[in-house]
Length: 131
Image (cartoon, rainbow, N blue to C red):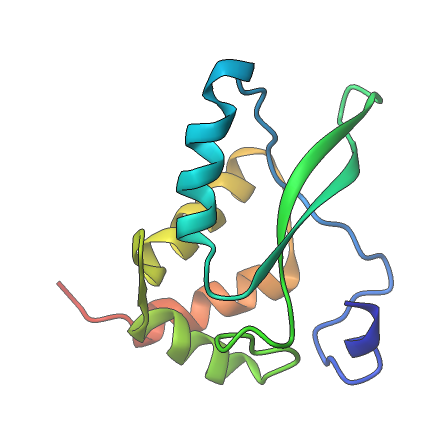
């Protein structure tokens, strides 16, 4: 989303995306893609990209990228607005807050320190219903 870099107060000079990739058995690909296409149906493009793995091997992986024509796309929205959306929205896979907090936990598990994610998590936890 290079087009938002000049308007995004959260943009980092060193843009790095962290995550996990999974190898899927060929016979399971159609079923898994159908599930992902359903889950990501709100305006995501599917793309194949080069992934630079921690073992220094570059692999091809499929990703889903939110596009500006996605009705839920927040672009460079202020963090409080993003936090409100995360706390209140529910998608086909369940509450967004569950997905988001799992993402934060996974990033900690692989020792990724992302200031944007940490700041957003703090705001989400402040806004989350107390159980």
